[in-house]
Image (tube, protein in one colour):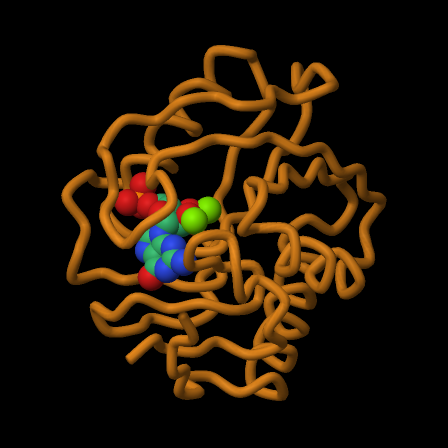
Length: 172
Ligand code: 5GP
Ligand code: MG
Ligand code: MG
């Protein structure tokens, strides 16, 4: 089956926004080193694009968590599929996510990472659906606030497809 996808945020807009987030992050972390944590799989495109625009010394690690299953609806439970390779003790950590929806995933991640004695933990998300929040999480860097629609592209999937779209689209 093929779904119809309408463009919500164009490739140019997404890339411009990520560039400006990278520049802001570079200023905020001036004089420090940054440890990016990419939340797989959705965060991978945003992490790569963001990293190109960060000018402070940078390392990257990957974590894979699952809260959604494959469809449209969150299961509410968060499960670690792949943990980090490296210790984050003493590091300035920036989590990079594709989207914050209920907030469950990021709340879980921040609480978990804080038990590992980092120097700091902040969050960067490409997309934010504030209408759907059920868990309070402080997000430090947001690309776009979007309405309560199921989006795909730029890392976001529907049944594992469409992650490779270079824009953010809505499935109709
Ligand atoms: P939360 O735990 O904040 O409810 O959900 C976060 C995760 O749910 C995201 O990292 C993403 O994987 C998935 N998600 C939430 N909203 C959407 C959406 O509109 N489209 C897609 N493809 N995934 C979503
Ligand atoms: Mg995600
Ligand atoms: Mg998904």
